[in-house]
Image (tube, rainbow, N blue to C red; front, side, top):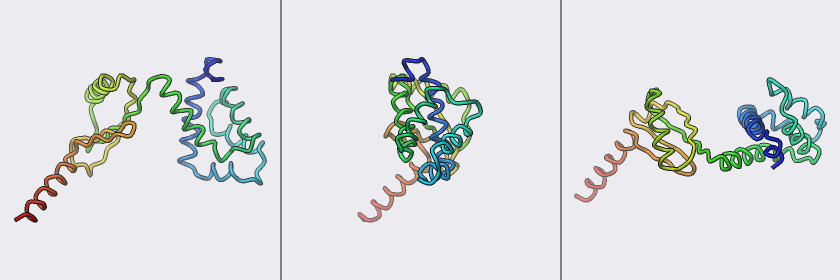
Length: 168
C-alpha cells in the first residue's frame, strides 16, 4: 500500500478516521462532495479546511485521485475500508464499553487486559454511559455484543415469570 511504503500509514489512518467522522457528523459535507455542480477544486479546498494542519501528501494525493475520477460518493466508504484495513494489519480491535455510570481507569485497564488475552489483539477501548442499563455493562466488538447489564437480566427474569404464569 502506498501510505505503508512511505511510512505514513498511521498518519493516513488518522486522516481517514477524521474525515469519516466529519462526514458522519456533518452530512452537508457529503452533499457538497456529491454535488456535480461544485467543481473538484472547491471540493478539495473544503476537505483541506477540515484539518487543523495540512493533510499528508499521501492523503492529499488520494483525495485528488478520488475527485479526478469522480468517485466522491464512495469517499466515506473508502475511509471506512482503510480504517478496517489498518486495524486488521495492526491487530487492533475496537471495543465499546457501555456502563450505567463512569468507570474507573483501573476497571478500563482490567477490561482491556482481559479482552487482549481473550482476542489476542491490541484493544482500543471506548466508553460511554447509558443510565438505562441500570448497572453492569455491555461490551461491543466486531459483530459481538456481551450484555451483562442489570436491565437485561431484569428482562430475562420478567420473561421467565411470564412464561411460568402462562404455563399454570
